[in-house]
Length: 139
Image (cartoon, rainbow, N blue to C red; front, side, top):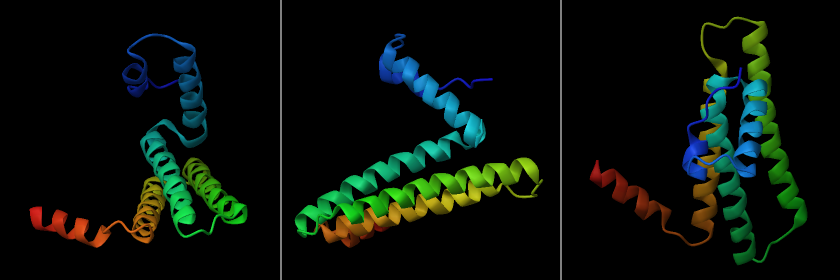
Protein backbone atom coordinates (compact mmCIF):
# COMPACT_ATOMS: atom_id res chain seq x y z
CA UNK A 1 0.00 0.00 0.00
CA UNK A 2 1.32 3.44 -0.92
CA UNK A 3 1.56 5.82 2.00
CA UNK A 4 0.20 9.35 1.59
CA UNK A 5 3.02 11.84 1.13
CA UNK A 6 2.15 15.22 2.72
CA UNK A 7 4.95 16.96 0.79
CA UNK A 8 3.38 16.48 -2.65
CA UNK A 9 0.45 18.92 -2.26
CA UNK A 10 2.82 21.54 -0.88
CA UNK A 11 5.11 21.26 -3.90
CA UNK A 12 2.37 21.35 -6.50
CA UNK A 13 -0.43 23.36 -4.92
CA UNK A 14 -2.65 20.28 -4.81
CA UNK A 15 -2.72 19.83 -8.60
CA UNK A 16 -2.16 16.41 -10.10
CA UNK A 17 0.60 17.07 -12.60
CA UNK A 18 3.31 15.02 -14.25
CA UNK A 19 5.68 16.24 -11.52
CA UNK A 20 3.33 14.96 -8.80
CA UNK A 21 2.99 11.60 -10.48
CA UNK A 22 6.76 11.24 -10.75
CA UNK A 23 7.22 12.19 -7.07
CA UNK A 24 4.48 9.76 -6.06
CA UNK A 25 6.19 7.01 -8.03
CA UNK A 26 9.56 7.76 -6.44
CA UNK A 27 7.93 7.79 -2.99
CA UNK A 28 6.27 4.43 -3.67
CA UNK A 29 9.57 2.89 -4.77
CA UNK A 30 11.43 4.29 -1.77
CA UNK A 31 8.67 3.09 0.59
CA UNK A 32 8.88 -0.38 -0.94
CA UNK A 33 12.67 -0.54 -0.61
CA UNK A 34 13.21 1.16 2.75
CA UNK A 35 9.81 0.82 4.43
CA UNK A 36 7.33 3.63 4.96
CA UNK A 37 8.57 4.29 8.50
CA UNK A 38 12.08 5.09 7.31
CA UNK A 39 11.05 7.51 4.55
CA UNK A 40 11.60 10.69 6.61
CA UNK A 41 15.14 9.53 7.38
CA UNK A 42 15.77 8.63 3.74
CA UNK A 43 14.43 12.00 2.56
CA UNK A 44 16.59 13.81 5.10
CA UNK A 45 19.64 11.78 4.07
CA UNK A 46 19.05 12.42 0.36
CA UNK A 47 18.59 16.14 1.00
CA UNK A 48 21.78 16.36 3.03
CA UNK A 49 23.63 14.32 0.38
CA UNK A 50 22.57 16.84 -2.24
CA UNK A 51 23.68 19.77 -0.09
CA UNK A 52 26.96 17.98 0.66
CA UNK A 53 27.68 17.38 -3.02
CA UNK A 54 26.94 21.02 -3.84
CA UNK A 55 29.07 22.41 -1.00
CA UNK A 56 31.85 19.96 -1.82
CA UNK A 57 31.83 21.10 -5.45
CA UNK A 58 31.92 24.76 -4.37
CA UNK A 59 34.81 23.95 -2.04
CA UNK A 60 36.67 22.25 -4.90
CA UNK A 61 36.13 25.29 -7.14
CA UNK A 62 37.39 27.70 -4.47
CA UNK A 63 40.45 25.56 -3.71
CA UNK A 64 41.01 24.87 -7.45
CA UNK A 65 40.88 21.11 -6.86
CA UNK A 66 38.02 20.09 -9.16
CA UNK A 67 38.52 16.42 -10.07
CA UNK A 68 35.93 14.03 -11.43
CA UNK A 69 37.50 11.21 -9.42
CA UNK A 70 36.76 12.93 -6.10
CA UNK A 71 33.18 13.63 -7.15
CA UNK A 72 32.58 10.02 -8.19
CA UNK A 73 34.02 8.76 -4.89
CA UNK A 74 31.67 11.12 -3.04
CA UNK A 75 28.65 9.95 -5.02
CA UNK A 76 29.71 6.34 -4.44
CA UNK A 77 29.73 6.94 -0.69
CA UNK A 78 26.22 8.37 -0.87
CA UNK A 79 25.01 5.32 -2.79
CA UNK A 80 26.64 3.06 -0.20
CA UNK A 81 24.74 4.99 2.47
CA UNK A 82 21.50 4.10 0.69
CA UNK A 83 22.75 0.52 0.62
CA UNK A 84 23.15 0.64 4.40
CA UNK A 85 19.52 1.78 4.68
CA UNK A 86 18.42 -1.13 2.46
CA UNK A 87 20.55 -3.63 4.40
CA UNK A 88 19.08 -2.45 7.69
CA UNK A 89 15.59 -2.83 6.21
CA UNK A 90 16.37 -6.42 5.21
CA UNK A 91 17.83 -7.19 8.63
CA UNK A 92 14.79 -5.72 10.38
CA UNK A 93 12.50 -7.78 8.14
CA UNK A 94 14.37 -11.07 8.50
CA UNK A 95 15.58 -10.82 12.09
CA UNK A 96 13.55 -9.25 14.87
CA UNK A 97 15.73 -6.77 16.73
CA UNK A 98 14.72 -5.18 20.04
CA UNK A 99 15.94 -1.80 18.71
CA UNK A 100 15.09 -0.11 15.39
CA UNK A 101 18.44 -0.43 13.61
CA UNK A 102 17.30 1.48 10.53
CA UNK A 103 16.67 4.57 12.69
CA UNK A 104 20.03 4.21 14.42
CA UNK A 105 21.96 3.71 11.17
CA UNK A 106 19.99 6.51 9.48
CA UNK A 107 20.75 8.93 12.30
CA UNK A 108 24.45 8.10 12.11
CA UNK A 109 24.47 8.61 8.32
CA UNK A 110 22.61 11.92 8.66
CA UNK A 111 25.04 13.16 11.32
CA UNK A 112 27.97 12.20 9.09
CA UNK A 113 26.49 14.16 6.17
CA UNK A 114 25.83 17.19 8.38
CA UNK A 115 29.43 17.06 9.61
CA UNK A 116 30.69 16.85 6.03
CA UNK A 117 28.61 19.89 5.06
CA UNK A 118 30.05 21.88 7.98
CA UNK A 119 33.58 20.84 6.98
CA UNK A 120 32.94 21.95 3.40
CA UNK A 121 31.55 25.28 4.57
CA UNK A 122 34.54 25.82 6.85
CA UNK A 123 36.92 25.10 3.95
CA UNK A 124 35.01 27.67 1.87
CA UNK A 125 35.72 30.33 4.47
CA UNK A 126 32.34 30.38 6.24
CA UNK A 127 32.91 31.07 9.97
CA UNK A 128 31.19 27.87 11.12
CA UNK A 129 32.73 28.05 14.60
CA UNK A 130 31.27 31.52 15.21
CA UNK A 131 27.83 30.41 14.00
CA UNK A 132 27.87 27.41 16.34
CA UNK A 133 28.92 29.63 19.25
CA UNK A 134 26.07 32.07 18.49
CA UNK A 135 23.59 29.18 18.48
CA UNK A 136 24.98 27.89 21.79
CA UNK A 137 24.67 31.36 23.36
CA UNK A 138 21.00 31.58 22.41
CA UNK A 139 20.26 28.36 24.26
